[in-house]
Length: 107
Image (tube, rainbow, N blue to C red; front, side, top):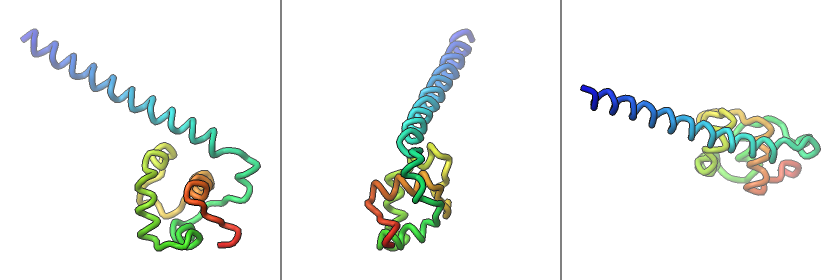
C-alpha cells in the first residue's frame, strides 16, 4: 500500500513539473514575441486583419495561407489565438508580413 501511495505521489509531482516546464516555455516564447513584435514605430502601418485579407495580400489562396499558419502554431498559442480564428491582431499581422514578405501597402 505504501508503494502505491508513493507511486501516485511521484506521478503527481512529475505531472506538476511537466506542466510548469510547459508554462515557462510558453511564457518565454510570449515574452520574446512581445519584445520582437511590439515596436511602436513599425506597428503604425499594421492593423487587425482577416486571414482572407492577408492571404489576398500575399497572393495565395486561403487554404495555402492556412497551411502556412500551421508552421506558426507556437506563436499563435503564445498570443492565445485559436487556429480557427478568422481575425488576426496587429502583432501577428506584423510577424506574418515579416516572415512571409507580404507587402500590405501595394496589396
